[in-house]
Length: 524
Image 1 (tube, one colour):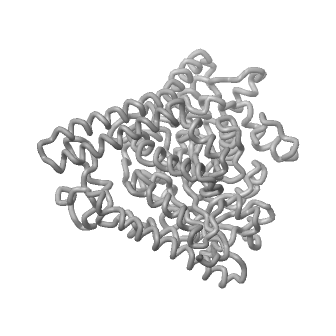
Image 2 (cartoon, rainbow, N blue to C red):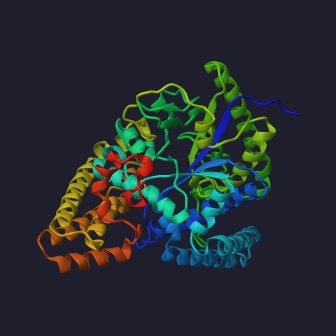
């Protein structure tokens, strides 16, 4: 029997995609959602259901952003996802008729995978993502992490909209799943001093930062300033073992290659082969090669976590915490074998004497040290804000500030000009488009040169929508403003419960009313 290891290991997964529905299909657009849904969300949730069926609890702190949740519940995307899975199966059928035995074998394997995904989708996802997510919360296998609407880079966002976005994001989780998260994954792990007070006011008890934000000392969570809000840091020594800018398990020669497509079928039929091997020269993917490699990587990771807990506990003189954090989309979408690795790791860690728990477990069980003051930070390049505010994307900073100022000014005037007895759909849509404009995804995609043109177009499209609705409303053309708001809402109809009447409360009411006395209509 393996000796018990001191401390706790926590796995955190951050699930997020920008709003893609009705904004293009290929090569960037809705296809990105359907690929991630089939390759990551379906198999990862399948893993979590199996763990829950075996009575395993508190396995993962799972972040699901409101904007992703909205897409997983949207009738258009759920219907289109079903069609996408059927198309995958048809492409596999055609490949299976090839005269080439290797291609025929690939086609048969892809057909079986597509058929299994269709069955899973019909059973768990056909009526939206909430039907798949709620049972995972209820069984206790996950801790759900929430976040602000539309995934803004919060440090650069006007404080009124920042508070509104967070309160509405937590309320969105309650409406979808009957559960209000006590923890969040702050978009891009971004922080600036003062946000801890906003978190406390919103009822957030803990959030994630990157390791360097805590100066590399991530062995305990840390209360921030004079609040009780705890920041947990990503342990880079452990996290980078799996995925890093330069190395990690997914790059092994035996695993399926992410970047290489078969042009006739649109399917991925090659293995990595070698880091310097060009796509056309890569060898065919062979699942027989994978199992032993997976086991080796699982054993190596478990051993590394075990030793890290022992070393960190000795260093700090008490039981330590080790937090590994990744994008959920790594498991399956970017790394085809990732879900299998994930399940084996979570099953083997207890066998190796390692206690697995969530961030909520860690906070409640006392894996918390002395308070600290944090500085400006993120989990991006340089661990600062350069990805979202550097010279390459400075125009986004200016655009966002101008659009948000216009939106807030117009909504304030709308609310002051007439009694807000009923919802004002024009003001609601102004806030919706402003939030989509300031999504952190657009500058990220430009800084990293991944579909930069698409990202720039999206940011300016939502900025244009905000401006033209605001212009019509401000000039007294109320019918035009209503028509424009309705037309834009046909494409951008997420967050149906956005209510501009709650905007002023984000600064005044929430600060003055004790948390225990706040009503649901006051945000959280």
